[in-house]
Image (tube, rainbow, N blue to C red; front, side, top):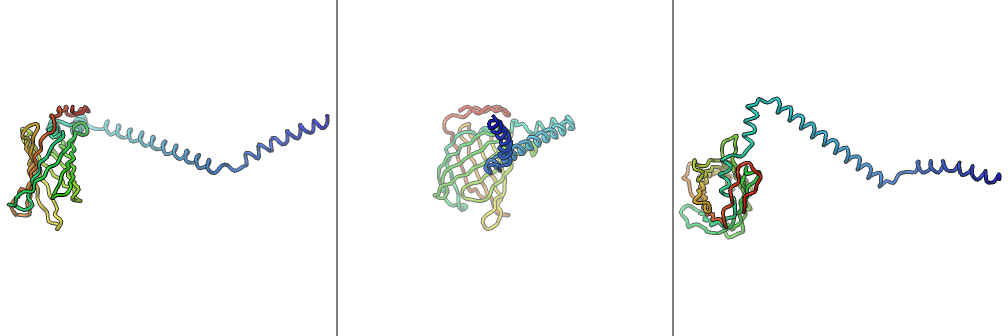
Amino acid sequence: MKRQVLVVCAGLCLAPLSVLAQQTQPANPAQQQIDQAKDAAKKAWDGTKDAAKDMSKKAAEAMQGMDPKQMEEMQKSMMPNENHKLLQQFVGEWDVKTKVWMMPGSPPEESSGTNVCKSEFEGRFVTGNFKGTMMGMPFEGRYVMGYNNNAKQNESVWYDSMSTGIWNSTGHASSDGKVFTMSGTYIEPDGSKKATREVTTIKSPDLYVSEFYEKTGDGPENKMMELTYTRKGTAPAVKPAGTSAEPSK
């Protein structure tokens, strides 16, 4: 009987020591890293949520403090309108015939290509991707065109696979929306600047022509390029300005 009591007492004494040993045993380093990563991610997420809430609160406060007329003007400037609707004439897939005059008075170099133009951000912009050849080599160019409500002008940018610069141009459409005239500046490899002018004429829903002119200093303006776009298939339906619906194909 005494032996049994001693065994039970010994067991009761050793149990706390075993638990204590487990508590004081160093944690698994890999698990520590996982726990630290979880804690860091949670703190980062909490900080992001707090920052977003703070930003939303400040934006709401700023809007509340605005004059109703200012609010109306801001909302109007953000929305696409009839000027943006005119840009939808360029949306679609096109076959392109290109003529390039390397020197004034010389015969043009002719080639062919394709252009795919899409409507972006509820009709606010159109973006295009041109593929063809230039001087016998593969050539690809991309562009974005829009109408700036605040500046009250059309704006476009162009960049391609044969240059390192971005060509910016601004201009306006004619009153009937059939002729777009854009002007810009191009810098030559020798650093000289050339004034550029692009005139795009809508001949029909399935045909338009872009003519490019350049001028150096006080010299004469020369026609350097002409592109004729013929639509593939049928014209997409023009979606109402400010809607998210995509043009029908």
